[in-house]
Amino acid sequence: MVTLNFNTNNEYSLECITNVSFSVCGTEPYESSQFHCCGDLLYSIAQGYGPCCGDSGLESGHICCSNNQYNENDGYRCCDGQVYNINTQMCCGDMVHTGYDDCCDGTPYHTSLNFCCGGVQSKDVYDSCCEPLSIPFLSSSQYCCLGEVRARQNPPGTYPADGSCKL
Image (cartoon, rainbow, N blue to C red; front, side):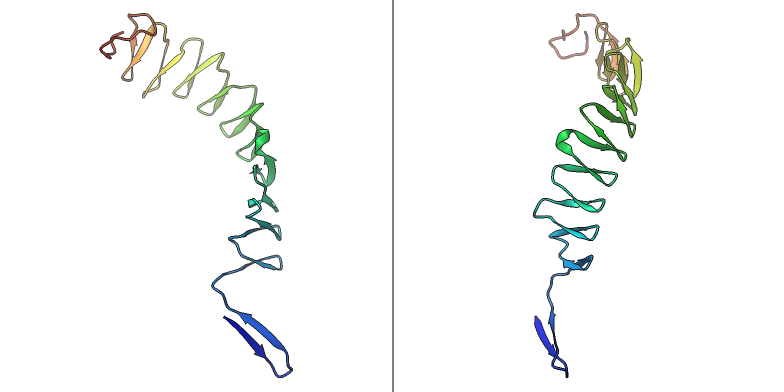
């Protein structure tokens, strides 16, 4: 509904009543379903901008880490507020680490030197993990059956035809 109001000095004002609610960004009114207001500037959702990252709209294909934007296609990720590159680094235990292959319950480790089972690292002893209790075992002489580690009686990779756990 639009109402035109006149006063005694022949001045008028236009009043517009809509069902759309507007917000204000700096001095500009805007509809929050179409724009993000970041640092008093408007960023169009239709043009691919995401929520605010610092004082600017998050560009498509980027991540926001500590209020800075990084290109996700270049391998950048955020680890508890620290930016890192997945091609050369890893996030483990909410910290960035370089030179490790994997994470074992929040501790980085080298998979060629250690084995992780149930959050515990072991060196050159075990190569498999028996679930659900996370019991480490050596697959050349042992096997896992229904969460229990048992001594192997048959060569690795052979299983009884009846589907039982009697190896």
